[in-house]
Image 1 (cartoon, helix red, strand yellow):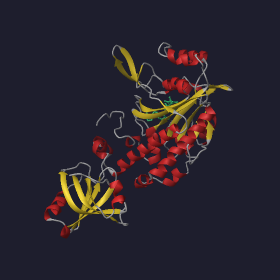
Image 2 (tube, helix red, strand yellow):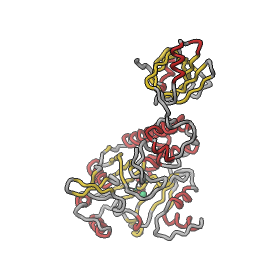
Image 3 (spheres, helix red, strand yellow):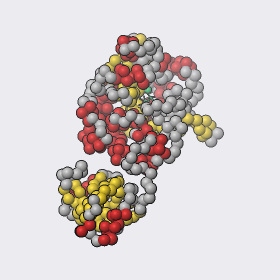
Image 4 (cartoon, helix red, strand yellow):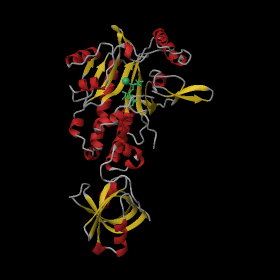
Length: 431
Ligand code: 4AD
Ligand code: MG
């Protein structure tokens, strides 16, 4: 049997007979009529089988269909204003491909562990599909923004001899006789690429052996890392806010149906336009003290702090100028106040936490050498990185956007586990 249509395109086939390859999402029957809730990955449509209008064989085939059985369904497409999709199919043929027995994920409620154990099937559900569609739109919008603004995409390595973001959460592997690590961030390589190409960005998987089991942490997550030569901290913030506003508005424009289908309040996303508010770390500490938090200057913010700060705003907010001691070795000190660095975290609204970490980078070779020593980083592994400061060093800045946290925020999900097809989490490697 050949298919000649997908559900997404039924609007182009009104009045025609089409054949679609589909699965049964759900089924209802009223004795003389069966209503097949069909899905094919591109969308959903109801197929109506009327007993008096089909052969006994087709009627019985339809009757035998169970949840997640697969079939070729043939029928006439009609406009149907009462249905969510606006269309319906009057079924004239049912060819069963595979009859499913005892599909584990029934329409009733299931616990999270059960769903995670069945992630390979859970992905078929309406909400999970919508999230994957929105994730793909976010990636498309990310690439559209950077490709349209003079950036070149560069792919940094995944196997690395050194760490980019501290040595505590590295995944160690053997690289023949050498030690290697799965990348925590492509940044250092992107700095080299920026010196070759000016404005670059990467999009790839990153790995952190984080022992923290929170709703914001994955072990394997995807990062978008732009790096820009001749761009200072201030200009980098302007790129970041325009970038995020573009991504959010692209999703609002192209995925409104998916957002609404998962219950997202789209009006909150419509308000995400640049510029975003900025507060310094010092101001944030002062604000937190006023809110009753007992956090000393010099300590990093945790999720409750970030959420308290974010609650003041309807858009993402930048927290800038963190103490050097709690930030990465490569961040450039503020020339007016060297105990803080020219950096910013972008905190998403509605309690979704930090989505971007970025900074201007140290461009002075001596200061960089000093930082290697302070952070106990073997200068051997980082010689190439020092070279970037030795040969035509320039001011440069960059940042990293965590894709899964961005998906969680835009979709309004309480946990990052639903933002990626097969999440790798603490104590979860299956499926
Ligand atoms: O703030 P981070 O650690 O910054 C860097 O890695 C820089 N090298 C980026 C750069 O300047 N090129 O991570 C960047 C972002 C975070 O803001 C967060 O959104 C996400 O990556 N992230 C995680 N997302 C999911 N699970 C984790 N374990 C994450 N760790 C960081
Ligand atoms: Mg960070």
